[in-house]
Figure 1: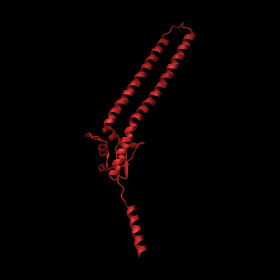
Figure 2: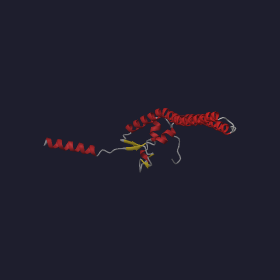
Figure 3: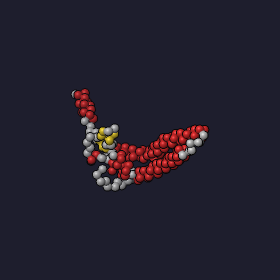
Figure 4: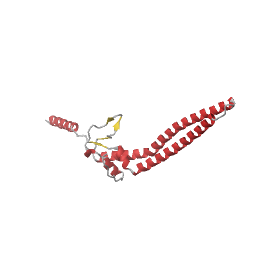
Length: 178
């Protein structure tokens, strides 16, 4: 009789665990970031960095265009050695511009990573804390990824974005039709 009772208790425990309801929530990263004061500063810093890079590139283009005009304006009697030298100089400037464009893109990506990484970690930790404190098993980002929705349906009552902002000490501003 004891074995049967013990067996029934074990079966009940396993059944209860199998029927445990998983609580799923979602956090909208884009919304959370847009509400954080750090985001505005990061955005401003990135725009400043991008503007500086664009201005340098513009100056390089202007220099190149001026030298092309000078080359095109050379008299027909200009010696071949001087023409060849100017052509090499122009080719070098073109290469320099292309390399600068690549380096500028890399620089901008690196700056973004450097500025955003601490914020990603901070928000990630806050999401984890809110999820644990509120008994969520899963938190999903409902952003569009690879052309398709991560969620096909979501109940707004499970959106923990404002709880995450509160955890971060940020008071969300009202949003009109996200």
